[in-house]
Length: 329
Ligand code: ATP
View 1 (tube, rainbow, N blue to C red):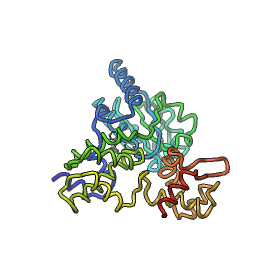
View 2 (view 1 turned 90 degrees about the horizontal axis):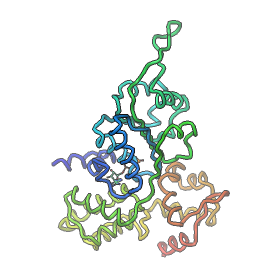
View 3 (view 1 turned 180 degrees about the horizontal axis):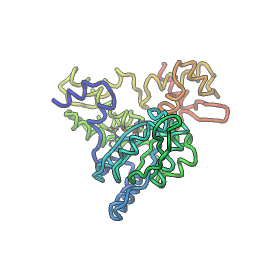
View 4 (view 1 turned 60 degrees about the horizontal axis):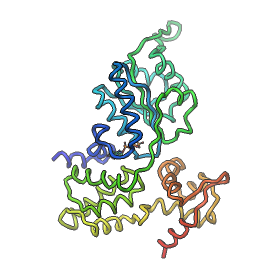
């Protein structure tokens, strides 16, 4: 059926969509964030005004896009989506701004990657709902100042530190998303197992949650793999033993680290004597992109105290040494 069609598309976003909550009330965890959002959403509805601009930051896969897609659904308004790298010049942004209906949401993912000219162009759009557009070319060109509909900008970034102060200050609500607890992830896994038409034991969902790096997107990926595994090797019901076997086959360890995570730690240990080592040097040795390591690998290692950042570079902790050595044995 429909599931097959979605799974047939190998873009992770397509797959994610089938599991994505459709309303903020369907989201698990992030309680404080949800409550603050509810306040501003309720107030905007009662005052009959557009919602103030919102900025989400935090590591990938924690729900920034999910929040951004649920808010317009809850408000019953239109939604447009683009991203920092897709907006190379102000003219790329103009259609989104002129198409925006009153109170609709414009979502810009990776907003820290907006070129400076585009960022500055956003300022008056966000503040006064006005933009300058150039009509005609060459000596006939003239600039007109256009009033646009009051809209809400939702920005998402994995690097709030890379945002300029003037842009950051234009978001009245800024929310940081943090890693989820194992119980919250287990709840997401239980719900998504049902959506994926597979049954799962409670101890299995808890075990998967413990190996999902505090990240719903990782939990979803684990669950999909385990579903395939139990469909292929068993009767399609996920037990603790089968979940273990499936994750073992993917080389996901007790802490939820995968090959790339362990390779990162073992590179620092083997090549840099445990550190301090610079991100660029580590990335170069691993033949990986520094941004990928900084965004997708390091946050969880830092949070679980396997890694520390010092002014002189990254250093692995005793816990990481023991973990990596234990794994090698
Ligand atoms: P990126 O920055 O890469 O866009 P993200 O932080 O926006 O990442 P999402 O794409 O929103 O992450 O989340 C990934 C998936 O995790 C979603 O499709 C959804 O299935 C699940 N998910 C995220 N947050 C929640 C939540 N609070 N409750 C239930 N499921 C969630």
